[in-house]
Image (cartoon, rainbow, N blue to C red; front, top):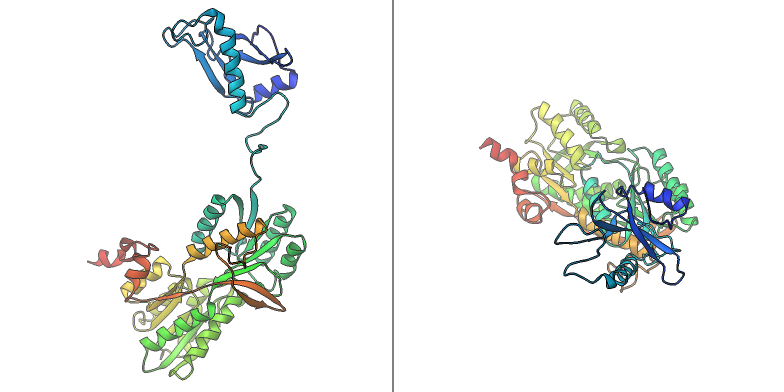
Length: 440
């Protein structure tokens, strides 16, 4: 590239090459620093042989200004000759243009500015988010709402998925500690197995949120979840209402390492007392594996097929329980309940093979969690009345009392599914009633 004069040292020239700015057959001239008298920049021809010049932004390599004759498309020796600007004013106009452009872009000859770091831009908070897995449909909703909310509040979110493996989740949390995250949010695979690494994070000065599942014996900054005991109560009440004459039932619980399951079981069994419903078979599904529910229902039916209902820890387990019932010609005859309001569960409710699902507004949970995570990163008191979502309760985690933001679950049946699920925007009417319309 030929030039009438040069103002770049070798490193600057190499930097320009790395930016891949358009090539030119000739430099049109130089612009000089008015304080030092030194050349402050080159003005290169934007296209070879054309009467045009461009001032390049040193951050991006793009031309931040093009100067040309509108009428003729030529005039290599004229600048902004819109209406015959006199040659006398050309140097003054060009200098004014040059310094205006560089003041707007915040560039100078001595200050290094990059696209991701500027003196005027506040550093974004860093949040690590570790999920148990994405096997359950709802976690994708949680992820999307959490990330979008946190980003809108000035935070970046690093999402990791443990695939149901506690050791993998421990490694992920250790990685977050090494990266010096401001906040770590955890959907625990195993609430007992994580306590040591979570305490390491707390000791490193990182704020910790137990998301939806409590981690035992850690002094976390926040536990946010639905009232899990109430989930069990709603399940039992639904079965009592659907089976007023009592009878035998199966209970297919969730993962034994999920501390929420204990609360659900407690609420469920306490509410059944004196109802005439008797649990004749129960089992826990490790890591919430739905296929285990299929096996357990079949195993229970080998003991007795004289049952009126099956309680399932979530809708994913319910799908496999109903599959087993169907293979034994019992689907629709045996009452089934679950939780999470998955689309497939809502479809089964309108089809008549599932009685109830517990709806939990996971978008609300994720939005509140993300908001409080950013507040913690800022050093704000989330228990204060001035907080957007003040945390007013605590819950025991071993010897620790953890701030607890509690959300309320809702029982969804055929009677209110249109109001809660469809009008609430959780699932569309077309999707919920898809199989009903196909039959029609």
